[in-house]
Image 1 (cartoon, rainbow, N blue to C red):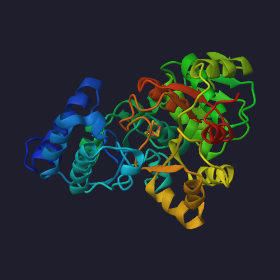
Image 2 (cartoon, helix red, strand yellow):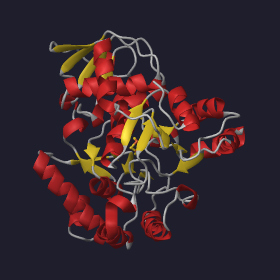
Image 3 (tube, helix red, strand yellow):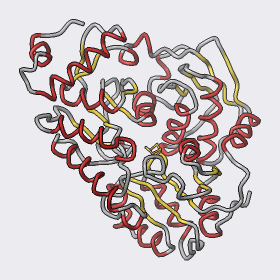
Image 4 (cartoon, rainbow, N blue to C red):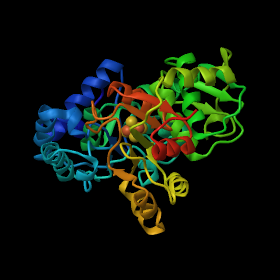
Length: 399
Ligand code: F3S
């Protein structure tokens, strides 16, 4: 790789330990993937925040870097293993909370915004079209590339952190226009009537376009919440973290429709639901907000639970950013959801909280949420917001 004089000094350790370590990571990655140089990034999103995933070795690594490492660009954080304020209410142990707080403290010393959300684009980390960024968290990466039109590879936690300390990332993969060309045309010949249908669509396309960049036609409209759900699902189930939707995503018109074509029909959506849903009727955990709920989704939940009560033996979690929760507090949505027995899970989510063995069966709107909850040994049901709230108040899945 060609390094500038400043980059060479960084690699030699002239700018401290964290920068040297970071340069070692970035140069090694660049050499593996054939990058010729580093490019500046406008922002970074760091995943790998939960102590549940990091363990003591990860915490030690972060503490070493935090001694002299300070981020050079706007850097936000993915969800942690617990709500940083109301962790007791979510049943997190004192021991786990103490470790998780040490992780957060290390990130704070580095100058990172303790945002703890997988929707950084909803709370102020919003790149411009065409901007190079270095993001980890697959749903956010897919959103940045596809819905915003920024350019990022799917970084891991350490490589994102390295980019934050250097302000640059190796120029390869999805930073290069020639690697952003769609390679399969996906014609959608079915209606999408609820949020979870977008998760099912992501499943169907992810399976049919495995490791490809889909160019999707046949979709007439999509809201931001639909697209964030689709981003989480399509990449979880197999596609690359970039897609185009004709008439919807900003770069679609600049790309040619590929010749290789697959179609998605109603039967593919049904098949997705059949694969994601287990045979289970008793629900003890309802979690919505994967990716983290927008304020609009919180308003919808509040409307649905108003005047009702979450069933005994069932928990309802609303996973969201602290910023969205603050808006919900002001609008009275928090009071309505909590009066019904629902709990806010800010800063965290069902995939990164230590939930293994705690619940038997999950209901959610999210295809990605189902994928990770199965790894946490839960049976899963995916459906609309209405179906999820219904499951929370009855403790049962009805459809
Ligand atoms: Fe976000 Fe966690 Fe889902 S990081 S996309 S809420 S699995």
